[in-house]
Each structure stands twice: as C-alpha cells, then as structure tokens.
Length: 115
Length: 184
Image 1 (cartoon, rainbow over the protein chains, first blue to last red):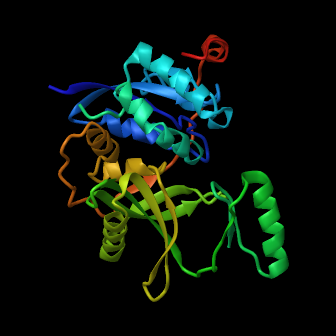
Image 2: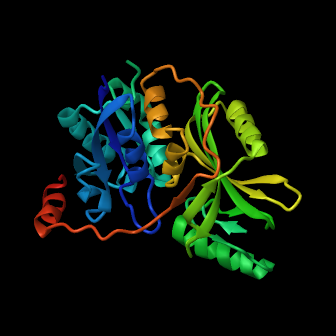
C-alpha cells in the first residue's frame, strides 16, 4: 500500500522557459511508494500548474522572496496549518536562499522534518 | 562569457563588450556578475541527487538536442558517459551535496569536461531522468523524510524527451479564485 504524503511544490510556471515544478510533480505522481497530495505554491496567478487539476490538488499564492522572509514564512505557516505539509520542494533559484535560511523554522513545524 | 547570478549569459568579444554586458546584467539581476573564459564545445548536463553524506543517489547525463532562443532544452537524450558520472560523484562527494542539482558542462573536442555552472536545484528536464529509470523527486522526498535510499546504479541510455506547449482551457471563475482569494 502506498504511503500518503503531502508535498508542497513551487515552480508551477510550465511556460516556454519552464520552472521545474510540474516535472517534479509528475515524478511524484509516478511514485510506486508514495500517494502524494500536491500543494502548489504560486507567485503569479497565471502559472499554468495552478489550473492542472490532474496534477495539483490545491494551490496557494505566496509572496515573492523579495517581500521578505517573514512574510513568506507566515504564509507557509498558514498553508501548513490547513494542509499539514510533509515536504516542501522549492524549485526557483531566487527563492532557495530564503528557504534554506528557514530550514530550522520549517523543521520545527514538521516540514522536511525527519519522522 | 558574462553571466548573471540567476539568469542571462552573453558572449563578449572585447573588453568594451564585457563592460556593457556587466552593466546590463548588474542592472537587471544585481551583483555578483560571473565572468568566464569562453569554451568551444558541446553543452552537456547532469541531473543528480546527493544525500548530504557524500553519496550520489541519482545521476543521469543528458545532451540537449534542441535549444530555444533562451538557451533552454526543448529536447534532450540520455548519454552513456562514464566521465560525466565520475565528475558528478566527485563533486557530490567533495561538497557533501544535500539535495538536487544540475551540472552544466562543456565537453570539448578532446573530451575534456569543464563545469560552467551548478544549479542547486532540480532542473525542468528532470522528468527525463524519471523516464530513464531514476525517479529523482521520489528519492528526494524519501531523503527529506530521513528514509534510507539505495543509490541508483542504472538508467536507460538513449531515452529522449521532447517538450511541447499546450493550450490549457479554464474558466474565468477559476482565475478569479486564485487572484481574489489567493488559493484555488
């Protein structure tokens, strides 16, 4: 039996210069081990992945990292309170540092934390 | 080559062009700006996953077969290249890399490999690796959860991907949900 898991993914911009979000999600959906619930995290409201309901169960808009770490983390904490995210996969170069800086804070609430 | 820290790369043919591209990139992406020697050869790439202890869990080499005007792969093929895998393992071991990465390399006519860039994340062509037998997103999630992952040893050589665009039809009501409530 597959293991239920909730994974949040950024990079839903499946455009001509695509973000990696949708290919990452396709890999997760192909998993023989996990049964994933996919939470999309979008910066823009026309990122195609938002509307790909066969791949993305629910999408939340999040603030750009340039809005500050605190704003982003508060939004992630809210989403986590609703969705109980197990793993968050950031896929944009520009957001990596913000998420890396917040590793401990995310782990404390159970995101990417070993269990 | 004059390159931005996140994006953009230009070939400069003289010092004046270096300065021009430096200013152009710095204004758009900020500093630092990367300046590298131009290398003649074929661009090849590796998507890989490190476990943070120096072990390479996944690694699949690829050559872009068709490149867009933005330099992005629109088609690619997995390669049988032991030198690329050896270099990937060496980098992951030395850095104790934890997570996904994309190695961008130039392979010269003499079969020398030069690292031109390391992207510290999964690349958009990762589904080629999944199709070739290494499900990198799945392995990454297992690692994030502290599960034991046995390193992949094989992948299918000559597996190809061809990217395509798709007109997705939706309703304005759906668009309103994400733009008004911030969730959909």
